[in-house]
Image 1 (cartoon, one colour):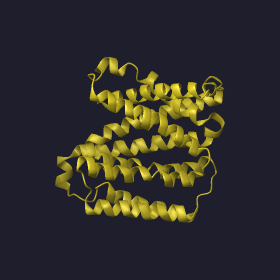
Image 2 (cartoon, one colour):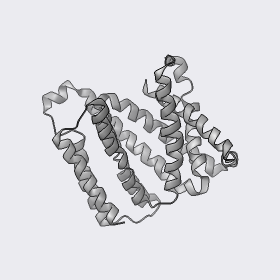
Image 3 (tube, helix red, strand yellow):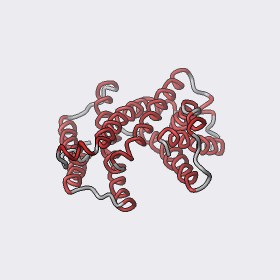
Image 4 (cartoon, one colour):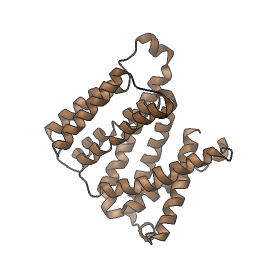
Length: 262
């Protein structure tokens, strides 16, 4: 589906699942009881998250699931920097050194050094996909910063359902103009994306953010790109090159160093 259509359906199904769960567990008051600061946090995090999703979905067909996910997950390092700057959380020299090694690994994993100039001229969309993924990673980190600072006050349920509500409202005209998918398999995939990967996943993510330091949050989020690489290989047959795999290994090694230094 079109990236904006995908994001809208993700938010619709995610919001529906979250509201049903909130009603069943009697947590709807966490939304209705939000004050001005809480509403601002939910709205800001939601807007940044929705925009990052759109950029990420737009990048996938340009440079594959694995590569776009690896580049998108530069966001933990943006989060480390933002946490240090805005939340005054301590980031050690070892963590910054590990970040530098991981950046080198990211360059290899993204495939930038794998090809000559002629290859790039034939595939200009690949570079655009890298840029979209990078921009999405910055916005995602901004949403994570808001969630990290406000999750304990606002609550994971309000943050996750609020960001879905923002997406439903902001993109409501898009499917009407572009059309909706035909009934069938596509609706099942979109429902799964909304219920599992948005409703369930973000309640768990924001609940974790309320309990962990920014450095550990950044480390744990790198489980995602490793999984994406495996799925890209197992389902779509898009195995990474040896240099790209080396890049993933370097990123993993750097993150293990950060983890040990926590």
